[in-house]
Length: 221
Image (cartoon, rainbow, N blue to C red; front, side):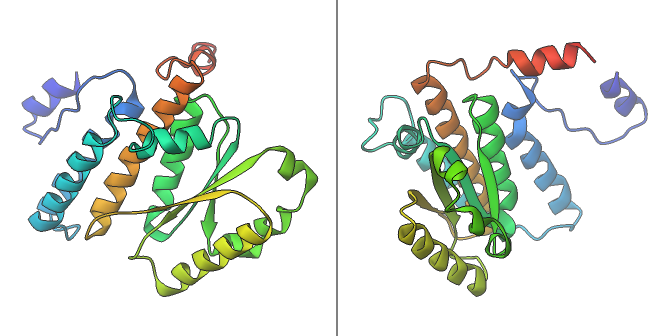
């Protein structure tokens, strides 16, 4: 296998734990990539940033455990809000990939349709559809992933979007990324999104690990 080949050829190897499904190993993969890229000076991440990221994520996870009630558990609270809705995750800049992760986790874990959109791009197209009857019938719920590290223009656009959503009576929830750097923002929001998708699955009495349609489609290839 690849492990033996790497050892024989003396090629550096990082092994990722073989856990339930690929989507559950994302943090292991990201951690490995960060280590490799940082060691080879391809990205600029220092120990202070990593320590901040680890500290914030640990604190966040402690507050998202199942014994914590919804009133104090952000993931449970948001999951409750988006039951029987069409979640639309809005992001920008370096958090766009995080929004995509939220969408796919809601798809696979919660078995629900979710959409993503991006600022400032959506101000050039999708906002024109907010008054559509068809759109209103989907019971949309906007989740805004915001950050104090966004460019100034993007921050202004988020403020503009919030005003627009209020004007059109469209529900939304703003989630501010926490931490002192982009790495902390990225990992904390990834963690929160994963927990939300899990609690939404539980609320809908759905097994978050079982994906029969995806499994069947793969077996038919």
